Amino acid sequence: MVAEAEDSEDESYAIDCPVLVTERLVMRAPDERDIAQLVELADNRHVAEMLARMPHPYGEAEGRAFLAMTKARRAGIAYALTLAGADTFVGCAGLNTTDRGLELGYWIGEPYWKKGYATEAAHALVDLAFQKTSIQVLQASTRVINPASRRVIHKCGFQYAGQGMLNSIVAGQVPVERYRLDRKTWTSLRNWIHF
Image: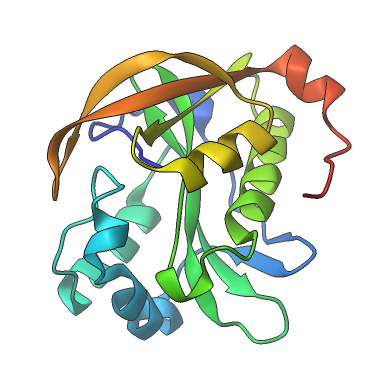
């Protein structure tokens, strides 16, 4: 999942950062205890190539800059995804403000791929976005070469909205598919089907 390179500061997208608990995840604000695992998982070109703002290589300085950015953010929200009961960091997810509105974004560390964590986190954030803001549409986008992210987006009920280009720190200008989920569709899907 990619997020736009330029965030806007629309205060209408301000969301508190409540701890979210899903079936297998505890989603909380990232903090100092995450630095080592964050650096280990984020320092992966396969992950960084799919995102707009993740640099590669990724070291402690980048991890600390990410934490500082999440604490200073006035709109949108960022979560550390941790395994329930173990507090093992597996990735990040969030709701980012862009010029197109609020956008869902996420990444999972490669050792945790294909376990459904991205879908679980995405469902929780979609619910949070529609419950805690007045948005009528939530955006999402993915690199055209990322079928795993596309599956997550589809499982959340997003509908294809077109293509665009994204400037990725690591990959340069890349094509993306854009998706949208409106409030009416979300309301009809609120009892998420487990895949």
